[in-house]
Length: 119
Image 1 (cartoon, helix red, strand yellow):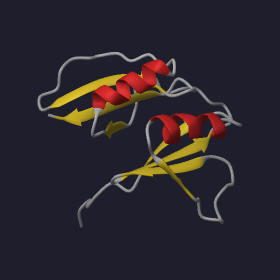
Image 2 (cartoon, rainbow, N blue to C red):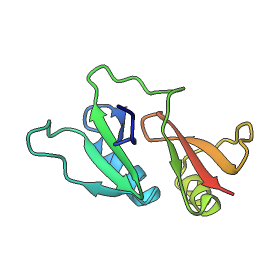
Image 3 (tube, helix red, strand yellow):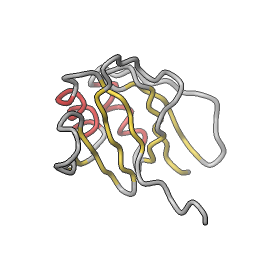
Protein backbone atom coordinates (compact mmCIF):
# COMPACT_ATOMS: atom_id res chain seq x y z
CA UNK A 1 0.00 0.00 0.00
CA UNK A 2 1.37 3.44 -0.97
CA UNK A 3 0.17 6.92 -1.82
CA UNK A 4 0.29 7.20 -5.61
CA UNK A 5 -0.77 10.79 -6.22
CA UNK A 6 -2.86 13.76 -5.20
CA UNK A 7 -6.40 13.94 -6.55
CA UNK A 8 -7.35 17.44 -5.44
CA UNK A 9 -6.94 20.19 -2.88
CA UNK A 10 -9.97 21.85 -1.30
CA UNK A 11 -10.02 25.54 -0.41
CA UNK A 12 -12.83 27.10 1.63
CA UNK A 13 -14.86 30.05 0.38
CA UNK A 14 -17.74 31.97 1.97
CA UNK A 15 -21.39 31.44 1.06
CA UNK A 16 -22.19 33.15 -2.26
CA UNK A 17 -18.55 33.43 -3.33
CA UNK A 18 -18.74 31.24 -6.42
CA UNK A 19 -18.94 34.06 -9.00
CA UNK A 20 -15.94 35.88 -7.51
CA UNK A 21 -14.09 32.56 -7.41
CA UNK A 22 -14.78 32.03 -11.12
CA UNK A 23 -13.30 35.42 -11.98
CA UNK A 24 -10.14 34.71 -9.98
CA UNK A 25 -9.51 31.02 -10.68
CA UNK A 26 -10.83 30.83 -14.26
CA UNK A 27 -10.48 34.30 -15.76
CA UNK A 28 -7.26 35.38 -14.02
CA UNK A 29 -5.44 32.10 -13.30
CA UNK A 30 -6.65 30.37 -16.45
CA UNK A 31 -8.13 27.28 -14.82
CA UNK A 32 -11.19 25.59 -16.33
CA UNK A 33 -14.34 25.05 -14.29
CA UNK A 34 -15.57 21.44 -14.25
CA UNK A 35 -18.98 20.16 -13.22
CA UNK A 36 -19.39 18.77 -9.73
CA UNK A 37 -21.04 15.35 -9.39
CA UNK A 38 -24.81 15.75 -9.04
CA UNK A 39 -24.95 13.90 -5.69
CA UNK A 40 -22.69 16.50 -4.01
CA UNK A 41 -23.74 19.85 -2.59
CA UNK A 42 -24.61 22.35 -5.33
CA UNK A 43 -22.63 25.07 -3.52
CA UNK A 44 -18.98 25.65 -4.29
CA UNK A 45 -17.21 25.03 -7.58
CA UNK A 46 -14.40 22.90 -9.00
CA UNK A 47 -11.53 23.88 -11.28
CA UNK A 48 -8.81 22.05 -13.17
CA UNK A 49 -5.62 23.14 -14.87
CA UNK A 50 -2.88 20.80 -16.07
CA UNK A 51 -2.71 18.02 -13.49
CA UNK A 52 -4.14 20.25 -10.74
CA UNK A 53 -7.68 19.82 -9.41
CA UNK A 54 -8.91 22.51 -7.04
CA UNK A 55 -12.23 22.20 -5.22
CA UNK A 56 -13.75 25.29 -3.63
CA UNK A 57 -16.17 24.41 -0.87
CA UNK A 58 -18.51 26.73 0.98
CA UNK A 59 -17.79 26.93 4.70
CA UNK A 60 -20.51 28.40 6.93
CA UNK A 61 -18.16 30.02 9.45
CA UNK A 62 -15.60 30.93 6.80
CA UNK A 63 -12.18 32.25 7.78
CA UNK A 64 -9.45 32.61 5.13
CA UNK A 65 -6.46 30.29 5.18
CA UNK A 66 -3.55 32.63 5.84
CA UNK A 67 -0.81 29.99 6.20
CA UNK A 68 -2.08 26.75 4.64
CA UNK A 69 -2.23 27.11 0.85
CA UNK A 70 -2.11 25.42 -2.52
CA UNK A 71 1.04 25.97 -4.58
CA UNK A 72 0.07 26.08 -8.25
CA UNK A 73 2.63 25.51 -11.02
CA UNK A 74 2.34 27.90 -13.96
CA UNK A 75 4.08 28.27 -17.32
CA UNK A 76 4.55 32.07 -17.33
CA UNK A 77 4.90 33.45 -13.82
CA UNK A 78 5.82 36.98 -14.93
CA UNK A 79 2.75 37.37 -17.15
CA UNK A 80 0.49 35.98 -14.45
CA UNK A 81 1.94 38.36 -11.88
CA UNK A 82 1.23 41.32 -14.18
CA UNK A 83 -2.33 40.10 -14.81
CA UNK A 84 -3.04 39.69 -11.08
CA UNK A 85 -1.57 43.08 -10.15
CA UNK A 86 -3.50 44.80 -12.96
CA UNK A 87 -6.68 43.26 -11.52
CA UNK A 88 -5.84 44.64 -8.05
CA UNK A 89 -4.45 41.50 -6.42
CA UNK A 90 -1.25 42.17 -4.45
CA UNK A 91 1.71 39.84 -4.97
CA UNK A 92 4.51 39.17 -2.52
CA UNK A 93 7.89 37.52 -2.98
CA UNK A 94 9.15 35.17 -0.29
CA UNK A 95 12.35 33.32 0.49
CA UNK A 96 13.85 31.66 -2.59
CA UNK A 97 13.30 27.97 -3.25
CA UNK A 98 15.93 26.24 -5.39
CA UNK A 99 14.70 25.49 -8.89
CA UNK A 100 11.65 27.78 -8.78
CA UNK A 101 10.55 31.35 -9.26
CA UNK A 102 7.53 32.04 -7.07
CA UNK A 103 5.31 34.55 -5.32
CA UNK A 104 2.25 34.64 -3.10
CA UNK A 105 -1.09 36.32 -3.62
CA UNK A 106 -4.57 36.01 -2.11
CA UNK A 107 -7.80 34.92 -3.73
CA UNK A 108 -10.84 37.24 -3.41
CA UNK A 109 -11.57 35.77 0.04
CA UNK A 110 -8.11 36.23 1.58
CA UNK A 111 -6.92 32.64 1.11
CA UNK A 112 -3.17 32.40 0.59
CA UNK A 113 -2.19 31.17 -2.89
CA UNK A 114 1.36 30.36 -4.01
CA UNK A 115 2.22 30.50 -7.70
CA UNK A 116 5.41 28.82 -8.90
CA UNK A 117 7.33 28.27 -12.12
CA UNK A 118 10.13 25.72 -12.54
CA UNK A 119 13.37 27.34 -13.67
